[in-house]
Image (cartoon, rainbow, N blue to C red; front, side, top):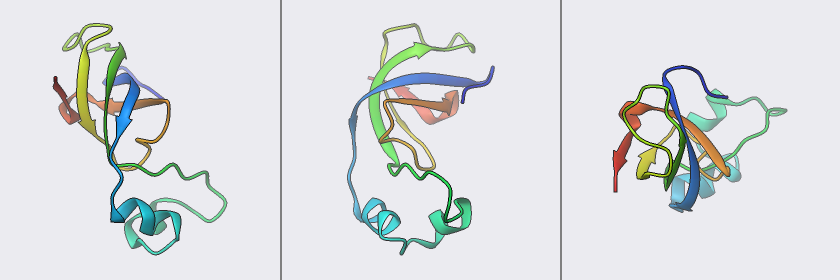
Length: 88
């Protein structure tokens, strides 16, 4: 979910790496500590896409960006702090 300090981005591309594979297999300790066995887990650490909403005013709707997140980049929409995004 988004708050007044997070930018909503519609993802267009994601990165696939060993950490994502290990997470899905339950072998990555960082993910195991953040998510319980009954929680929904969405892998993905890096993405690019277009801004849907930015309450901080840093980016404009439709602007292309790349970003990082602590898992969840494989979702259709990601909400991240503005400091985790860069313009493309």
